[in-house]
Amino acid sequence: MKNFSIYLKIILSIATIVLLIFVWNFDNDGAFDSILTFLSIITGFSITALSIIASSDFSKNLYLKESSKNNSLTLLHELVYLFRKSTLIFISGIMLILFYEFLPTLDEEIAILGAKEISISSILKAVIWFITGVSFMVFINLLLTFSKFIIRSVSNKRIE
Image (cartoon, rainbow, N blue to C red; front, side):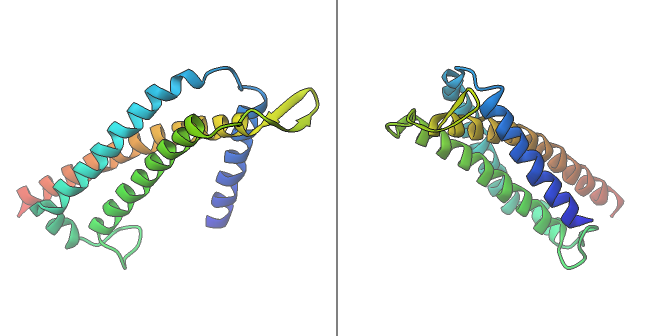
């Protein structure tokens, strides 16, 4: 079942990128400056939050609690993994936008499918928009998960 979920995510990702290349490929790369700012801010937030967690008693409490998903890990392992994954996604979005902005000759046509020309620029734009959407979802998930960890940690302190 886990493999099916992974394959489904891969297929949906590829389908979304193809749609972004062929259907939703508008002249919308002017928004990349704003997206770059947003990704930079949430990357900074993630790194700052992780450093605050690392230097607090909160991390000690999380390290003592076993993960419900995998009993070989602690809640601290789960949270650090989530922050690491999120930060890497945000940084990959930043890198792609920088590649798009600073690499020359991206508009050269590499293929024609039907009446649609495909260029490195259109592929890169589609991947940037895809990573941006994923970044929004990952950031929301990060905030929700982090808030659950905080509530759980505080509620455990009151019980003790």
